[in-house]
Image (cartoon, rainbow, N blue to C red; front, side, top):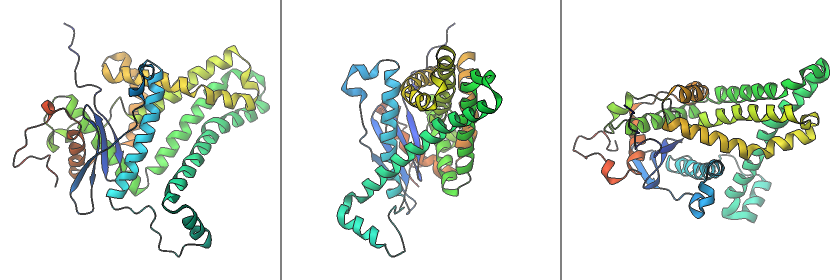
Length: 331
């Protein structure tokens, strides 16, 4: 007999924040943060809804690109809000501001933080392009110059493996930071809570604690799938064209095919998140392995935050009955 599809699969998604968790569900988007007093504050979040503006943005492949953009914008907004609620002053500085800083403050006023954030975002994109686009191409060209054209067909594989190595190395490095380690614990709490809901269990700390912290629809899995898809598409381009002979052409080409990579990666992870069979387990395996770095086991206080976040976006019929001793109450 064919197994009935779980209606709860794929309707809740989330993101770990600073001392909190953001969730997106049927009722919208909300974040829950453990504030300095020890209480949990829950807040609805207005998010960018590009898909709702046109049916074109919801068709396969296109929806993956749009979803990625929406996730970046909403995730950044939620991250900044969580830092504020957690009591982290992003502008705090004990040192006397320099003349240049005073000049910027006088000229830009309240817009200063937004401008600095935009500059940081641009620099982040430039760094990503250098590390994941230009550097692998440059290193292979140097290697090819030493080894000869007999390795020309290995360009896509070499660049892909190097990208994955850079990605894994970066995650392993930042995971050693105490603050990032706590975010990764909230990441684990997010996954466990979503699993608890999808499995039809009551949203209690005890039930959530038993769930796996590795989820097939994780953003980490999406990024890993994008890297693997990029290897496949780049291999096809190398095989059928000579575009890779010139880095000044090859690097822009790789940037231009990024939307295709996002679209394909999204469809794969969407399929894997809604089905459980040998194929989807194989497709999910690389991302699930990588989640051993990006998720950590949460403590009960973190699980409480994730539960509050999920409850804020659930339909009324899925909300648990509240009782005097309910574990989902803020501590």
